[in-house]
Length: 329
Ligand code: KG4
Ligand code: ZN
Image 1 (cartoon, rainbow, N blue to C red):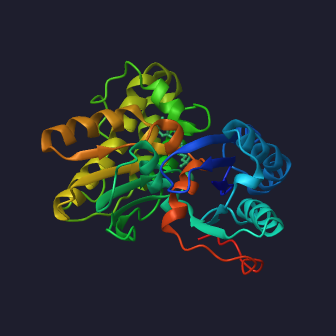
Image 2 (cartoon, rainbow, N blue to C red):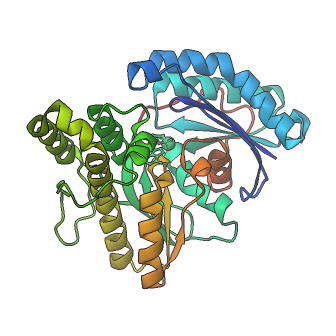
């Protein structure tokens, strides 16, 4: 079994995944609520909370799977990208466990983990495919080749899609994280009421930009004034959410077309969004293109996806990983 650990941001996660990375026996996520009152993730608070929680989360992942450390043959851990202090807690724990049991350690890239969540959702899936990762920290399109190598096709030039949703939600006085809050507020709202901009529409461009959208919401709120903005909330939320979703859908379909992708994968926290999922399901059905979007709990940060990426990541033999470092980028 693979023991997988993920601590790159504000979720403390551990999972037990089968050796081929296609099935998780457990997937424990402790979401840190300490950040909610700050309206964003505080790096120091995240590191400390990981330190306090990680042992218990790992123990629970073993218990939930009905295994012990004796059943673990490899330890996989997120080494980059993420908050450096948060990553280091997971990396140190993984090194300690692997070293104490003379096991190899697999250093996993968080973004490859997000994509690998698709193998848990659909165990028969094989590349090539085009993948969209849309999370709080990243928004990028990749072509994943037969050897599981990821080639960057385009990315955001400023904010990530999740960041745009989080900041938009904050401007609208909604809670953190903003994505789910905005989705709730948008229910029953008119998506066409406000015409928010979609950047970089030009043909063949596979990059994203969300900073103009954010500014546009700010101006719109100023124009409306506090009271009217309150009554318009469902429409503002729906129009804003819809602009983010439309930007993602457009570029993903364009990448699929340019690269003649036989399948599409969508991953990262924003892939939990219902409007995005529904729109892509409809578009892919029309195009007869296979679409894999993992269930929401595998889209947001978790360790099962890190275990799923492990079979495609070179392992470091015992004990050569003691000097292994985490990286923020
Ligand atoms: O992948 P993730 O859990 O962490 C990062 O690696 O960033 O993504 C978190 C992001 C946040 O910006 C959050 O607002 C967004 O995913 N998110 C959503 C939904 N659930 C989480 N965005 C839209 N709709 C959702 N249902
Ligand atoms: Zn993530």
